[in-house]
Image 1 (tube, rainbow, N blue to C red):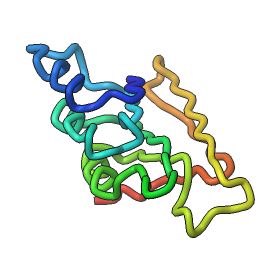
Image 2: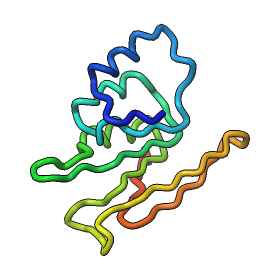
Image 3: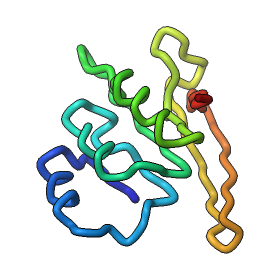
Length: 122
């Protein structure tokens, strides 16, 4: 599920669907993981692969650590397109390449630049 910049107003409409067809295999955390998109955590209880893009400009430092901690509870596979801004490598950005094999219910991930995998061990 590619959520783009979906925020809570739109997510509330998803919650009105009596029975969503299934839990998504892949979820892009909406709106760079801001608090204004937190209600997506009420829609899905388990997702195989979750990723977030970052938005760091001025006082903006997304994704929110609270949001990331919440997603860690519903997945074992969480990726972000950039590490901590104090710890950047020479690239200053990251790319997450996720290849999903729907027939074999599996995926492979390659991380480039500053992209990182988040430890979700419970």
